[in-house]
Amino acid sequence: MEPVFADFSVDPAQLSNAVVAHHRCGIAPSHLALGAGGHIRLDFTVGEREEIAEAVVAVTVLGASAPRDVVLNGKALVEQVATPGDEGHREHSDPRVTVLSVPGALLVAGDNLLEVRNPEGAEGLLRLRAVTVDPAHDRDRSERARAGRAAGRSVAAFTTEVRAPGATAWQSASRLLFHVETVDGGGRALPAHLAWRGADGSEATIGLRADLSAFLGHRRTADGTVTEYRGTLADRRAYPEGTAGAPLHRFSTEEGHDGAWSPSGELRLLLDDGGAPVERVSWTDRRGTTASVVLGSAGGPDVAVPAGELRDITRTVVGVEASDEFDLVGEVADNLLGKDGSKWLANDETAELDFTLERPAVIAAYRLTSANDAPERDPRDWRLQGSHDGGHWTTVDSRTGERFRQRHETNEYSVASPASYARYRLSITRNNGSDQTQLSRVQFLAAEAPAAGPTQRAADFTGYRAPRGGEPVGYRGTSVPGPWSDVPGGEGGREAARALDQLLAGDLGDTARGLDDAARLIGKLAAYLRNA
Image: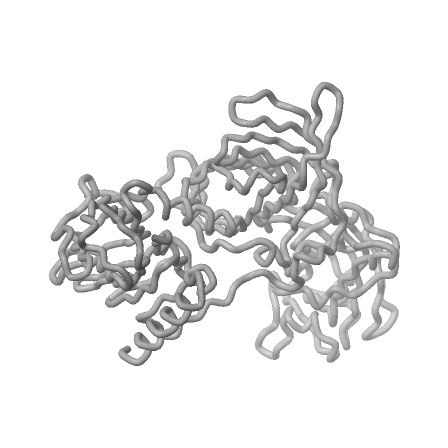
């Protein structure tokens, strides 16, 4: 029997040798929530010549579970059963597994139907995370297949929260996206523990659940603030599609043994917590291999401005906020990004303008354009500052006593200390004597890379690596310059669609093992669509 599983810990669900329909269910990021009277039906196939003396059905639930029934081919395996000790557990509690023995006589050659129900009148939801069916002599077959499929979706995105020590309330924090993978012929293994340090001195350490559904840890910001840190899996993506638009580093690596270095494959490293670029990463994977690497320069890409022509990247600004704006007549901060000659006006002699870029960039120069009237409102003294998190700002350029000689004049200023930031602030500290401040336009310019090479290049690394129970050895890497042919351009992400709310469809290529299986599966899908 091919491995049979339905994994609802991701959306869309991952299925093997199965078609799943559901009723009275809500789709959550990490499970299916079955209300009272709700059920799923899992249609799977047993080969014509297979003889199975005994099978096992494993049902994995999350948090406080409601009573449930499990029925195979019309025969109840259990009725009104709940996992012991469920009471009082929150939704993000550890998964709990109920394993049921199935006499081989209940299985039939060809199509079989397994139902998991939350009975009518049941109190609470049944949060269903996974269902597997296996022969008793190889009861972990589906779990191994499911884990192997999950390892292929090695780019993980988490929604995160932080909480001050001793506090009760959690506060939302920036998304965490990571991908740590060694390509050395030893197979894929997801991290169990992960720690990193940012170029601004911030640090974090997390422990990940075995199914990667959540993590718990702690972090310290650049100013020394310590918080608890937790996250919930929002998305798992396959490599390389899931890394598009993200700060991915790739290294050709070597291991050092007794002073001699030998090739050890490739390291792919992506870690983005919404703050400063990383300069150190440590991890332990599920095989027990431990590694720690330090990048040769903080953040690798974008630390130095390459020689070349300047290009306008103002179009990459995705948000602008002003300390004040005259919205009554439409003289707002958004006008600063346009070319139509409109303006921004603040009813104050000082002002701040915050710009958020779609991705971190090194601003090498910037341009300010004076407005249509009132020269006394022109900025005279200001600072340009950069930030990774919107809370801690570093001055990259400052000006005093600047003048615009005429209206709608554009002046260009070189940045004194360029560095990579996702947020920039223009802090105007003095104008030409008015109680109002104005500008017509703000532009940001980055250095165009020379034609002979890429704009960004990851730093080399040095560190160590140790297999489970083994001795640590030297570990070093040389960056592989991009762009890479196996990483698509544009923003990462996924598109998920369903034919009907009642239908969950898995990957046809992974579900059907031959033309006959494909025809059978397509027939079932068509029947579900006709009857919905």
